[in-house]
Length: 121
Image 1: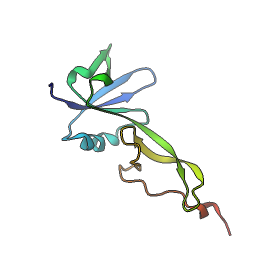
Image 2: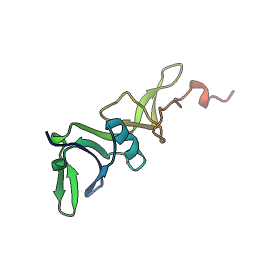
Image 3: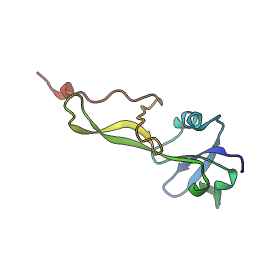
């Protein structure tokens, strides 16, 4: 089996570009790439052959990857303690681990809305 590498695909409106990430494992690659990634970008673990040229640009062929995750921002969450639903736009989530919620510093998100935040007594 071919050696796998870690890649970050910066997904643009018109073109995408792929960058190699020096990392020891999948979680390390996520942590190292996170600060440079934007919503919709992709992180992948795959052989070099998965990086497909597209003119002066490139993209990642997901079918050749061992790990593949898209980064998204925002989720529907439940406020504490009532459980009423709200949109939390500060949360980051990788698609391969949809139950791990991150803040902008690649730390566990813990700043969930409290029901009394909007109350002015």
